[in-house]
Length: 240
Image (cartoon, rainbow, N blue to C red; front, side, top):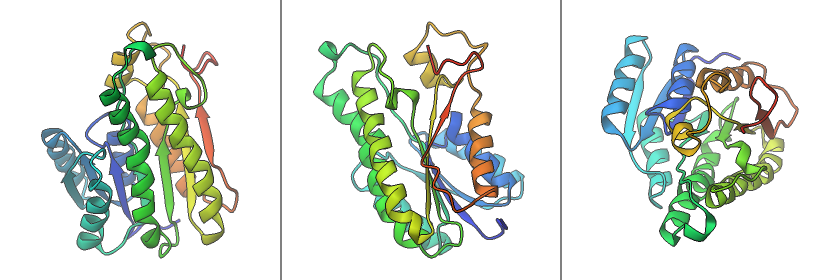
């Protein structure tokens, strides 16, 4: 695959998995639109990518805002005229028993982890259809299929993400768009430290390993529909 002139949009790219994926795409020569809520971290990433010789556009936005999906696609098309790769990576999590989870926390997790990616995919599809490598990566979690204590709302949001991703993969595969859901276990990010402070860091998955998978799927694009990839820790367990 020739990545020259290709445009990618990466949400939640101000740190962790999103930053690693954005950087890896830039290394491949892909122009990257980075977005997230932390303006200062985005500025640092933009400078880093530009120092590598990659054109970068930055949009400070919250994916949980209903207007953000349309805004991000508009900004991308207005700036570059096309979109080839969409990475839905932004995520929000709260670790609480179901009995203590508030309606506001439920709404925030569903809006960030499910509704935002759903409508960003919807907004992106008309432009991905014009690409010869139209691809969507939805970054989920092992909790999207396995339940863990104190993560009921987060698990529900990731189940929703994985559910619509599997349907979307079937809908757009005949149209030339690939949809991949990557569901890692414990990844060495700030979110993992917050959600599972009991986990040691020795066997955690590195964010760079998720970027490896993204790069592989882009480079070795085929006709097969790979709608989900589980990423386990080195000891064979998904998270705990």
